Length: 485
Ligand code: NAP
Image (tube, rainbow, N blue to C red; front, side, top):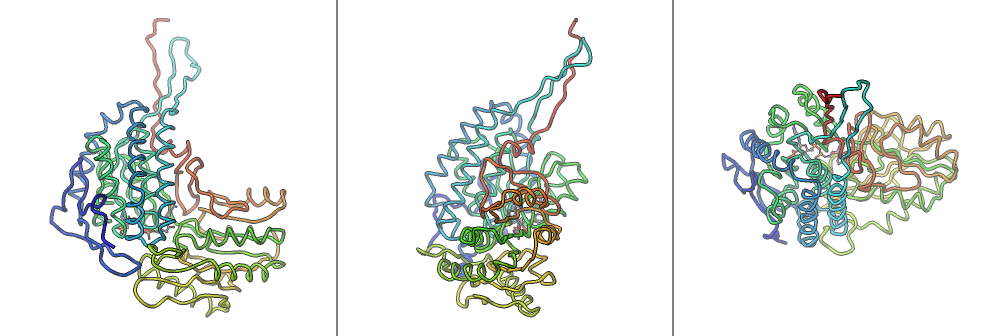
């Protein structure tokens, strides 16, 4: 299927205009479901990034000076445009990333909810008047946009990862320079097409593709850019956080996870299976909040494993995301397939048992079978590393304290899940898990109205909710004297 020409640009969007890379270099984009090249995008570096940052800086005073309602009106227009193009954007996302169309449609619709939420939330950026310790002075606290923001996003949610950053930045009054993953650039560039059409001022939204290290370095070092918001691996996040720190820039970091999914003896097993399928296999296991370690209490271990196997075999259908009935798209590339393969063979080599799946799917594209292994143990790779693929590894535990200790035995702290019908246990476990997001009897919990962020090596800051806007605002204290009292 060809790219939709109305929404697709093989150029970068700087200061309201489309252009090639300075040196004319390009990067090929492939469809992971077929391995075929679907197009090229510019391979930009520092010079183009510097121009994009300069354009955003020029746009900053005008954008900041608009009222929240004026900014919000444009943001709602952008959302209307996204929804008017939902079919085309869905196909584009599936072509470049591979996820099934129904999931792509859901992702784009959720992105719109984030932008609309922040468009309204901007009206509630309240300050404070603090009782003054001086009779003749007044203390006023206001919140101001941080300035130009650089955004770097991954390939697994090519649309919504941008939406949740862009929505907050625009609402706060910050222009943005966006760098999507080179693997999925078209969903990002489509924002430029739509922003231009609905009348965003030049320079408020800029979108660059190219050399990640060069673009990242310019964002960290350019003094005009005041904040970096990043979603991706912990390795790159630490690199960017370190470099941004040298230039004292604000950062938001949404990084990797290694989510535990705990099933207690008293759980509703059918609900737990439903949650495990959604949490583990959505996006073919390529989400940062995917269950990675499934801990099942001794008394229900075998029953849960059987029910999960039956559900996986009955419900999950790998294939090209453009085809009807497909629930499991390809993995993003060959490296991703090799990683799942390595985790499976490491687990089996250390004594795990294969319950279903276990192999790459041969033929075109980068597919792996939905897989379950039982008898997983703490010395296996899957216990320590994010698999980022369709491998459900079932670990056995005996009591509540052991489950909490095992769940916390990782450097990550993004999402965790547990299933129980005991109210006391709900609070004990919830309060003792060292994670930013907790799903209790639920396997998918993301919504624009709630904060989304990790602790430990999973990052800093939050996206979504009223807390998400704070990450794009500075606090200013003004002391007003000379009042003639
Ligand atoms: P990644 O390799 O860190 O890439 C993420 C982004 O960083 C891409 O745009 C990439 O560009 C760019 N990048 C790579 N090297 C860079 C550098 N030296 N300087 C600046 N930017 C650089 O991560 P990924 O493999 O694409 O994504 C998967 C990871 O993201 C997983 O660990 C997942 O858990 C995490 N994630 C976290 C969240 C969250 O909200 N916490 C959400 C989704 C995903 P190129 O692709 O063009 O090289």
